[in-house]
Length: 316
Image 1: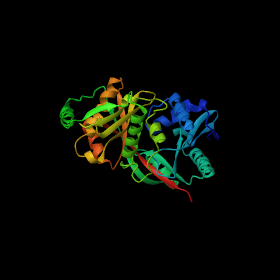
Image 2: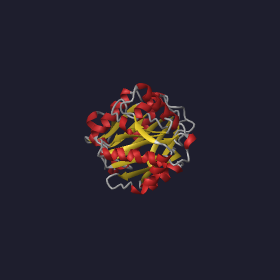
Image 3: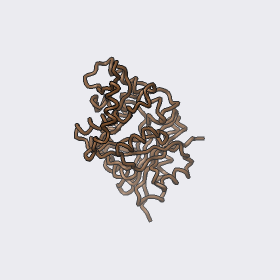
Image 4: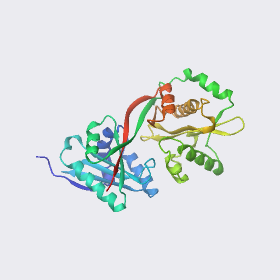
């Protein structure tokens, strides 16, 4: 007979056990320290952030997380429930899910979203049994920066240069310029499949995803400018996984200059900067409907990783 378990709130001492359970499920290699730093950022931003641990005989056997996620549909909170493989099918996930539901109800949040790897059939079935339905699909991909060869893309860079395009960044930028950049990002986000129809993000939210108040890399906030100084596009990266990888948050061009082949040179500029910083891996995620950027990623050599279904649960 399996040992009984109890569900309790997460404490910082649980961080190593948390990442041991969550990393294999989420396909990442985050650290306990990075997890606690993430919590610090969320709490500083006064965002919903609740974690619980299911414990049996002093060992964590399951975890649950209820939190704000900027890319969710309006009115949704995110919920993750994960159980150690050897304890699945024993009611641990059910107890954690009930805990999440109760807290969401206390907060007045009737709609929940969760992300499940598109290769994780057991978790998809578990979510379906609880009433989650598919909302969208995102592709994850990774680029080996150590082995990357940019020579096949010289013609792309030359075409951009022939249009008078130059690249700069926000290193040393004054507050007025940085504020304009943040607004430029906010405008481009509303044009992505991920956030189409969503309210425009406040600048504080843009600052947060770009880590400007926690781990700023203004040299990784790249801007493409035209021959007359006009702003044409951007690419923005942040450090992830404890500084082991660069994450490309967004690469986008202004609608007026689409079709001029600027997305690939922009992303190439990001790759150069990450390599110059000694980063060996670049990661990104793309909505399944973002065909143009997915094509750019394939050309550059990004390797597809297990993607993720975003599932929605609507309370009654």
